[in-house]
Image: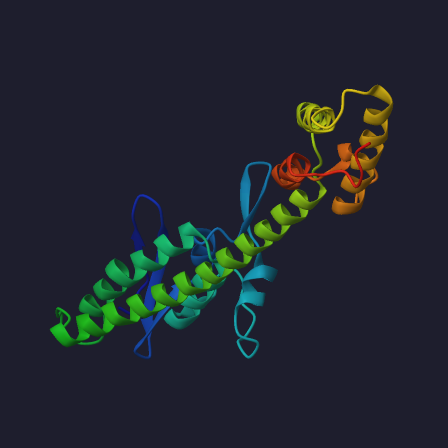
Length: 229
């Protein structure tokens, strides 16, 4: 298959050829298929700087009209790391490359042997597993950051108006369970408010953290004044 041959499906199109027993692909079409493009005025332009940054440092710079070997195609697909890139990579591995090997200059048309099919399948499985492992690590890192953010938010959220009222009523019930005298009740209110501030490290009972509401209610319900006259 020295001559150029174009492969396409409903999503992708790529030209390929064989030189020196090596499959080469049109790098511009590969980049477009992988979504390594910018769109200006409705026209897609290949991001050549990005393409070349994805290739190994010892690889020559590529541009429109150049062809790259199969390993570099997979390198670009891995770096692109998106759903479209995965679909393109699967399409190459399952349909395009086996077709080239059957009809190209590797000899007369042939079907991959069972051993060759297993090798191709294993390579694809290993590559997919590696990609999934990296995606899982990234997901775990993202989830940890969300958890840290959630914990920080929980640390900052104080009681809303309804919760403040609930705590206020609990304080009143506890105080009046000890006395009906207004003067004595005033003293107990001050004492309980002071102990709540000390216990929860807040300037006012209204500033108790929401996550500590039930603990505060339990504290109030079991509170006993130092001295009841």
